Each structure stands twice: as C-alpha cells, then as structure tokens.
Image 1 (cartoon, rainbow, N blue to C red):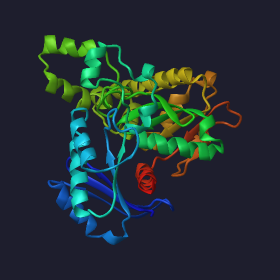
Image 2 (image 1 turned 30 degrees about the vertical axis):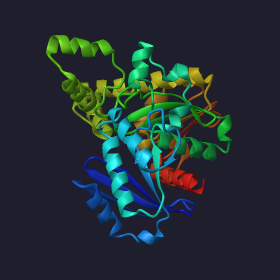
Image 3 (image 1 turned 180 degrees about the horizontal axis):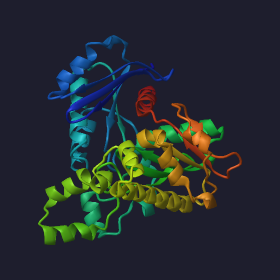
Image 4 (image 1 turned 120 degrees about the vertical axis):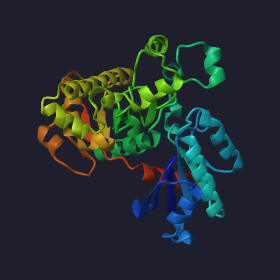
Length: 367
C-alpha cells in the first residue's frame, strides 16, 4: 500500500497530489481555485484519477491542539475534534474539515488520515510552550505555544541528516522555513524543542504580511488611541504588516530589487527581516547548547542566496559560514553551502510536505 491521495483544502482552493509514498514520486497533481463547494472540487480532482488505484487519503490539517500529537486515522470522533479545535485556527481548520468530509463521502471505502502541522511540536518542553500569563486563564482557553510548519520540519530535518551522512538523533539543528509565512525551529535529535510560531502562526519571524514578534501593549495602545477593534488588529497584524507593511512589497525578490535600487523603506524592511532571523538563530543555538547545522527551506530559504548569506553573516562565532559560490549556485537539490572545514554545516533542503504527509499516512494505515 503506497499510493496516497494528498489533499490540502483551503477556504477557496484545493491542492492535491497522488504520490507513490514508497518511491517518493508524484503520479499526478493539481490545484483547483475559486472553490465554493469542496465536494465539487473533490469530484473534479478525482475525474482525472483512477480512484481504485488510491490506497489512502492524507489530509493536511493545520491545528491539532494538544489532542493530536501524531498523524491520526479519521473517524467521526476525529472530525468532531478537528471542528472543536477550529476556535484555535478559524481560517484553516474549517476548510480542512470540509475537505475531509467531502473526500470521505467520495471515497468511503479507503482509510483517511489527518496529518497535523502542529504535531511535530508536541515534543516541546513545558518551559518552551508555556506563556507567562495566569495559569487558569491559559488552561481554560488553550493558550500555549503550538507551533506550525511541523510537516515541513519533520521532512527537512530527516533529509538534512541524510545529506550530512549523520544519524538524525545526534544532530542539533536550527531550521528556517522561510516562505510568505515563516518560522524557525530548534531541533535536537529529530525532536522539536522550540519554535517561533506560537498559539497562532502570527508570532515569531517577520513574514510577508505578518508582523511576527511585537510588544502586546502595542495592541492595547492602538485600541485606546486609534480606535482599533479586534477585527482591525487582526487585519493589521496578519495582512498589513511584515515586509508589506514596512515596504509595500510582499515578494522577497521585489523587496531586494527595490533595496538594491536605493529604496530606503525596502532596505529597512530587509534589514529588519534579517535581524529577526539572526536573533532566532542565536537564541536557538544557545538553547541547543551548540549547533551542528543550520538549514534553509521553503520559497525564500530555498531560492534567495542574498537572504541566506546575510542571515549567516557575522555568525562565525557559532561555527557558521557560507561558501559564496555554493550559496550563489541555483539548484533544486538538497545541498551543503558552508565552507570546507566549517564547524557547523549550512544546508539548503527543499521541503516536500506532500511526500511527508503521504509517508505518515502510510505509516498510520499500516499500523
């Protein structure tokens, strides 16, 4: 049993792939946009697929809360729990659940598995996931650090160990998942011990449109002096901040081009972005007690040699450095870009969340 139909259902889109999990190959893939009914989108996707060849369906679900710490076989009770957790991910869990229900109705005789973005971070120690607020309030409302991009981190950390030819359980690494949404993770022996995103994907690094870390009192100040309400603050921090808020750009390529052309706002945005990266690299190296590898992944991490070079610049005291030629060379392969003899390796590892979902789906079904 290796052929898995992997689904990533958004509010108005459905991304899908059929993969051979054992071979690691894609049989077919597609993206359906302007989705109004997920049942119709599932039917459209299946129209070009031999449904009888599918052995299982793997669903990407963003938030598993404290309940789902591993990929899980879906039944009615699991559906109900995903729905209950929507309060923690109101933009992501509801469409994911709609995709689950539509796919289970269309393919009722094969197993369906939920793979949660938060599950990889279930290993966070209490001191890393606990916020210093009233404990009863936190308990009653599920307030803690959950972390995200976990499927990517699980795949990338294992792949980095393969590239280095070292056992994963021996490695201390910081992985930077840098896309429009961005996060960092401290990974010791293949286990997440800290991560920058928190209860929601807003905390942490500077992102395309999200602020990342900010003094919470700023929000109170804006409520008092500028009349912001919850919806206005949500819009500001999630959709009107990050490099967009600082420069007007949301694409890192456009931002760096503008900075090179002398745009002061773009230059500042790039500086703020890199400053935040360095802060997390250093903090996580301290938590890990040293560093064996720094890994870049996702759209910006895989493709921007400028961001990689600037993030590592000045961190020689951690054993980090990049070879300029290796860093500048474009490739779709996982590779080492650090200088020969560097105490800690620097790698670029393309992520493959769909393949990871397929593999975890097979593992759950095979028991």
